[in-house]
Structure formats: C-alpha cells, structure tokens
Image (cartoon, rainbow, N blue to C red):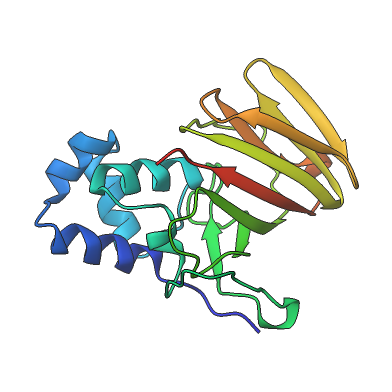
Length: 192
C-alpha cells in the first residue's frame, strides 16, 4: 500500500528555508506565481519538467522533493515496499486530474544523477497534448500496454517490451496510446 508524498509542502519548505519568495522563485524557474502557489497548495504537478526547473532554481536535486530520507550506500526497492506515489497531471486538459502516477525506485539515494520510476499512465481523452522540456535525458521501457511519445514533431508508438532513449531538452509528451492505461519504467537523468 502506498501513500502520497506532499511534494507541494516540500517545495514550500525548501523555498522558505532559503528565504526565497514566490515572485523570486517564479523569475528563477520561469513558472507563473499562480502555478507555484497552486503546487505548494497541493495541486497536481503538471509534469517532471516544471519540478526539475523548481529544483534547479532552488539549488537542490530533484530527489529533494521526491524522497523522504537519504543514504550513501545502495538503495534496494522491494516491490511490496515501494515508496509513495507522486501524482502528475501530465499537462492534461483537466489540470486537477492526475494522469501519471510515479513510484520512485531510488527514494533515499543521496547524490544521484538518475531517477528511476515505475509510472502508471492513466487513460486520458485529451486530443491536444502540451509537450514540455527540461534538461537531461530519459529512457523509457514499456512494461504493459501501449504508449505514444510525442518527441519534437515526431510521434512514436511503443508496445510492451519496446523502449526509447531521448534528450529531454526537446519538447516531448508521454501518454497512453488510444486512451488506454499503460505502465512504463522511466529513468530520468538530470545533469544537476
């Protein structure tokens, strides 16, 4: 059984501990003050890209918002003991509805450059996807279902067992193909 991480509360805590106001954070990360305020209030995260921008602007690693503790040695993640779920709206038409459910496979690992996740992709009837970009690279392996990945001006359909590796600076969007659920293993590298 998993519980949810309050990512918004962690963003606020780090921001306040660094004496950074919402206006200043907005200028540093390029996100609107209203969006930052909503995120801190518990609104679903639009995607990993904005969270990476916030982490960079505050001078912390992405895992600061996704992990509960830190350790130097190896991190073992037993499937029955998986860490809490982080919900993202995936830039869906319905911003208050979570479409991606992330389970960290490295929660607690200190000084990491990669963040591996199991991501459950929920059905989304959106027709106009809003791609995002961020620094780094991503590797995606489809565990179940069928996934569409919009990458720049191209679109790729991946089925169970297929994978893709790409530069995250190119605008991209990941969602279930044909409005169906899917599950992926995603490894995100951030050069911070």
